[in-house]
View 1 (cartoon, rainbow, N blue to C red):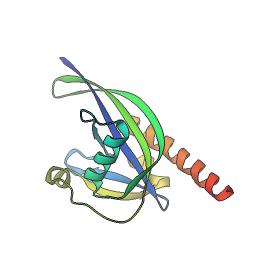
View 2 (cartoon, helix red, strand yellow):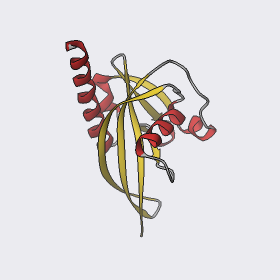
View 3 (cartoon, rainbow, N blue to C red):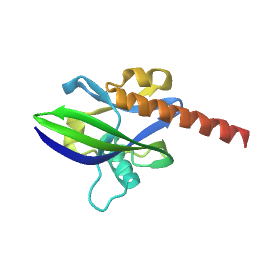
Length: 147
């Protein structure tokens, strides 16, 4: 079995008490937006690009760096070692951008209340990162209301 290492980055978008997730019915999955980091791209740049492409929301802003995690999985005869970087994001505006045809076919963006978001996610690694994002979001809300 071949071993493949790569890096990915994604955004956890929270707005008005809801988290933006991706429904992927073809695999019976609910995921966080993320994808490969391209050559010359920083994790933050990749997270913005991937989140924009997969969700169609064009006006994203990074609120916090949520750190990274290592994920291992087997898929189609290969063993993958993926380093995933995540960022807490918000919408700077409502503008939508065209999504690539493959993303339109694979994913449907859905807004899920924070209280339900973690349970809706398919993979434990993404659940852990979503919990981290919710905690960072709540700290941000507390700090902004105290100012």
